[in-house]
Length: 257
Image (cartoon, rainbow, N blue to C red):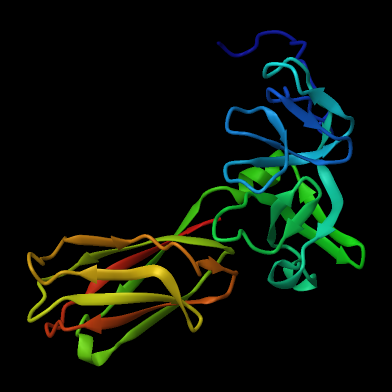
């Protein structure tokens, strides 16, 4: 469309409420944490990936017998108090300003549980009764995405057992470690073992084969457990293997937030 040449009656809505369609065969309780699924329909918050927390339900919406969009639900973005988790998942005041994660439609946790939970929003405050969380479309947009940390590995000589370290700028889940060689290996393979602090990441060992090695060859590891990282945690790569050539590599640590 072209630029305006006269006044325009531009529609508007209040920014303090949404009315998304409810997913098929779904009931949402008043006062619950509400998410959008991958199709953009409203569902109760639950332990799952791909959900977008948008706020608190202002009413009960029963679409138990309907198709997607047969009813809509009033949802209010904002700061709301939810139940806290326990043990390693408990949220304390040190988490204020960080993301927290969905357990169910009234409970949040400090960790993404190995990448199985979606973000609930940002921790606003913590008290004896629960966790105050700021949730809404803007929070969800800020929470999504992947961070890539570039790490230079100066030498892949296994006997040196060199270690390179980098602090994580975000909380999230380490989903991949990828490498590219800057030259050929000699004698044997090289390995890079990824750790969070002193804990080795399960499935986090990149093996770089000597056979066929050359500048530009890429390898990767896809972690499966012990991969949850907090902002400020030390991520490290420890060199191992039988390679004797002083060849460098560049590594990328992929963190999903």
